[in-house]
Amino acid sequence: MLDRTLIYYLIVGVLNFIVCTGIMFMLFNMCGFSEHVAPVVNYALGSLIWYLACRYLLFRGTETTWQSMIRFTIEVLICYVLSYYIAAPLMSCWLLDYESVRNIFDFGGSDKITGNFEMTVGAIVYAVLNYFGQRYFVFSSRFEYHRKQQESTCGK
Image (cartoon, rainbow, N blue to C red; front, side):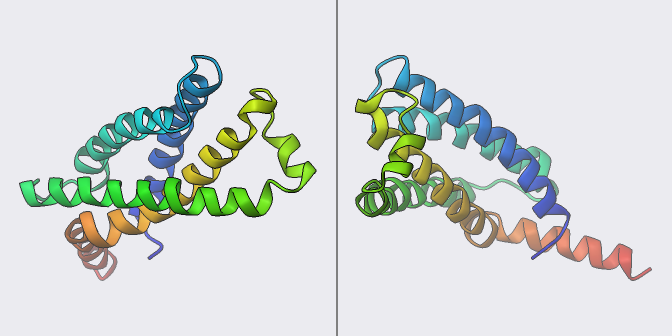
């Protein structure tokens, strides 16, 4: 589980997360996009960047198939729905009753607290779910390819 691909995954993922999440909050807080549309833009852009990074930087050495592209799309949609329509609203109901939590998320104004909180929770839950989905569902053969390469070079 802890290997070179995880380190690269984290580096690329953190950079992608910062850029795309920043765009999401800018769209929501400054451009008037809804708390449902801003994340869609975020994840459409982020998913495109992420797929290209996985295909050409992280998991080189195996072919891209239509099957892997379909699995990628399905995995992104499942992570998105679980993150933004299940986890985020549940956490919102539970944690936004606390004034200290509300104060953290009022950076866009008091009318944006719930949206900022749910987008933050959704982004974090999405990142965690996405790692495991990418590793074990979408790019599992590429992880295996790189693991075998590492084992063969370490065994010499």
